Image (cartoon, rainbow, N blue to C red; front, side, top):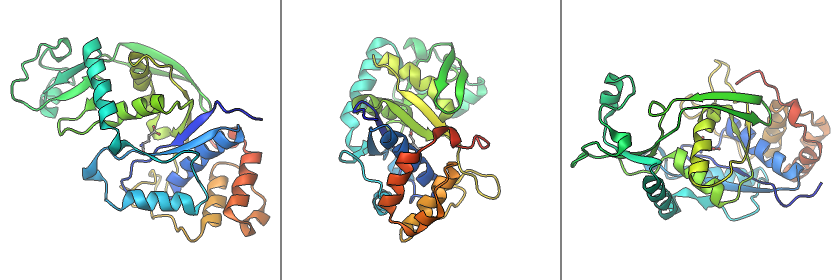
Length: 290
Ligand code: GLU
């Protein structure tokens, strides 16, 4: 099958080195792209220097390379994209799809999430207070199709669910940057962990406010540790051992429900990846963990 249209990506936030769970996500997005003759990109979502150890980006890129996961274009860094995010924020503010909000978390909590000031109408008295920019969601019973999980329905409540686009501390937020870059990079298919499933309905509204058609989504189950927690920095997931790429890839394929022949444990990472792209069975991914 050849298609130059498909463009996928792996977009880690560099909060720590790659662990087994992130390798599984990277591999699934890579194989979805390659099995369809598509392109696969890497984007480092380095938006929050306070949560990102300086060495993490290098560790992630080295790890991906050690596992033979090479992107089809130069790696993109969100830390170098501030001008594009600012332009998107100005557009959203101009259109009335974004608003400045100086409400503190405490004030919002005290009002069950509703804003004590008429922020959305652009009438709150911000004065000298630091403010965030939020996206003004519309009420919506959003229905969409996940390529693995099937039909999805998410209720979006205007105001209550409004995501932050620019944080008070001055950092651009994930919800904005991910959409701006997926549009700018022409991403047609997003493959990511199902911990981000609940973000999708909000992101659809941001796409349409920015005049773009949303991509297709495929959410894969997150990998859990023995205590049933998501593998992450918070749950102390160990870093991948970059000296054992074939073992790691083999286990990641098994975690994705694929059935690589055991002879491939003796092969090179490139060989294993070529086999996996050729035999990729999306519907074999286990749906147990969500
Ligand atoms: N940067 C996000 C994360 O590491 C993933 C973004 C996405 O795939 O939409 O959780």
